[in-house]
Length: 236
Image 1 (cartoon, rainbow, N blue to C red):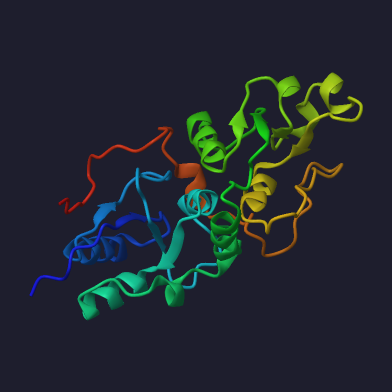
Image 2 (image 1 turned 90 degrees about the horizontal axis):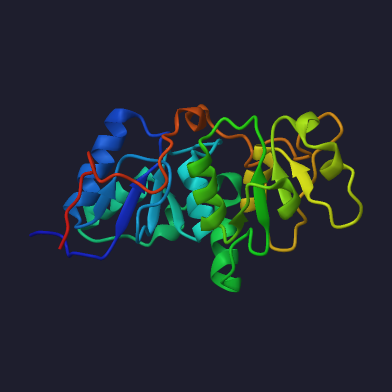
């Protein structure tokens, strides 16, 4: 019998190997899900992001999931669900890397994104396209500004090139931090202050933090939103 249809939208992380991604997409589609295999941001209505089992570094799409309060689960969730003929409870299969679970629970508890109240300016030196970064900030409840003087956070991996008049401003000046530190902030527990960049230009974050982003970041497409081309879907 055909598995019961559920309103589930699944997006795949870029860390999945091609063969595994294909198997996950086919299994999820068989369960009635709409599956998005391309892109780094979240498709409309996304409920779950699927990443590699045992991942210690998060694909960028997992940060989008953390920002939005979506589930980030391993591929085993899809396969076990297919075996059962219906969607399994995702809690057992939720990824534990990088604080994505804590971020989801915080969003459910407060209703606010981790960057709520923040205005971010991306100032040179970023490995990702501006549209992708802006989409992530807005997904996390923040705003984006092109002016370093109109923001609360300046994100750059070239802190020495931030305008002196901004960097040396008095109280109320924006914090300067690296892209890695911003990603850590998206997964940080509520109430944790966003750390500024140190004098050496490196984010002051702990070892093994969510900031250890995989190499797929640099391969991200520069489109905000996501193309439907190439997606495997089963709409109803």
